[in-house]
Amino acid sequence: MILNFIDGQYREGRGGRSFDDINPVDGSLIDKVSEAGREDVDDAVRAARQALQGPWGSLKLAQRCDLLYALAAEIDRRAEDFLAAEVADTGKPRALASHLDIPRGAANFRVFADVVRNVPTESFAGHAPDGQPALNYASRRPKGVVAVVCPWNLPLLLMTWKVGPALACGNTVVVKPSEETPATAALLGEVMNAVGIPQGVYNVVHGFGPDSAGEYLTTHPDIDAVTFTGETRTGAAIMRAAAEGIKPVSMELGGKNAAVVFEDADLDVTIAGLTRSVFENSGQVCLGTERVYVQRPVFDAVVQRLAAAAARLKPGRPDDPDANFGPLVSTEHQAKVLGYYALARDEGASVVHGGGVPKVAPALAGGAWIEPTVWTGLPHGSRVASEEIFGPCCCVIPFDRESEALRMANDTRYGLAASVYTQDIDRAHRFAGALKVGVVWVNTWFLRDLRTAFGGSGASGIGREGGVHSLEFYTELSNVCIKF
Ligand code: NAD
Picture 1 (cartoon, rainbow, N blue to C red):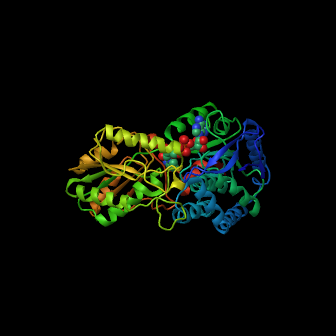
Picture 2 (picture 1 turned 90 degrees about the vertical axis):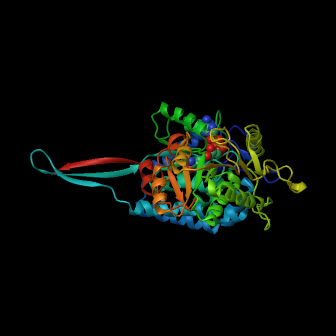
Picture 3 (picture 1 turned 135 degrees about the horizontal axis):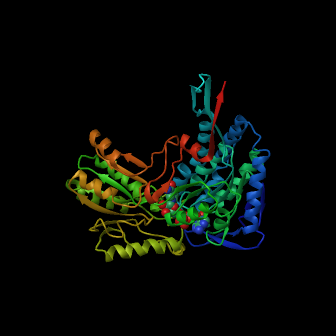
């Protein structure tokens, strides 16, 4: 049984309810998960409050940072355990999780310990009306008890992306991992205890959203802030709950990200970038590309080479050395993505590659397998070209002029990420600056420096996290003015 982690102890939910954790590779049961009820969430929030007022709150900055470095080292030491848990929950290739998810899980603690040690606060020297000197300086204190609500696509990575800076800034947390992927958040409790993080600093409650742990946590009167990563619709529900108590929220939400390929692009670089941004993690990356706009002279070449790259993806078990493509996270999500595959045909798409469920070994037949898919012929305004699918698929749409590409790329309610492929440096700067998104990559994709601002505009979110920007959310800034 995967248990809740409350006040430093692994516990079953008091209501005795549980749900299944299913392996999306073959539909087998990994384990039961103990569901937290309202009382368990109350306990977790209370434990977090006590830790804040007690041992955690009284640590010096250097001591706190040393504990975070120890946490990162312990995650590295137990990388195989985290890898096994993450791969079982998500079905993603081991090769991907071992170079992306787990190392980033550790890095998120190291980087934010470095940030809080090194980032200064502002000060202004001035004068009072009577001519006496005055000094203003800013001081930061933790926000308090932070609710962290997480998605399933990069479970450890995205959870620690919040927990790392939250703890570095001196907060305590209650985490609600996705019901699809509860294992690594639970396992992190062992690491917390092993390195001596005081009990109550890190708590995990398992369950669903409405009428379950997600709602109980985000509507709890004694939390001080909510940081959320997930679907835009869920973000809206959480914002409504947070509005009741005037709780600050950080929202990292959905996207319908564009890639724009100009005729002067290096096509080897472009195809390598697009292959990752469309298909990596089976398309279940918030930053992933689902719309590809290609300048007409290279349109056919890009379509043909991207389809060829899709054809080289081989579905199989995460540890199969010949496989490099995992299933979707669940058969429910598979049904949603297949719904869009059917809709694409209705909307007039030509299926250049994929479009259905691949043939897999009989032992994998119960898994959430899906074909990587490339469409052409879809109008820019079609639903498939406008709505977030969160699968390994993209529509490729031609353009003639730069202004036309910019108009189409920006014509979305989302604004998370975009990538641009060109060798013209002037165009790269001009185009990147005009895109209405939080993150732009030129001639690459998902190259992250954790010191940089990350987040979306429009329906993709509110706020920026990363580096010093995380401090804005996870601390309360006070200005002190002294006259002397
Ligand atoms: P989701 O919104 O369905 O669920 C996210 C979490 O919210 C889960 O833990 C879920 O249990 C919880 N939840 C659901 N309803 C709730 C409610 N009413 N109150 C409180 N909690 C509730 O998202 P998902 O399907 O797990 O993840 C995929 C989505 O996440 C995609 O839209 C993707 O774009 C987005 N995402 C965004 C980013 C980003 O950085 N912008 C990163 C990763 C994923």
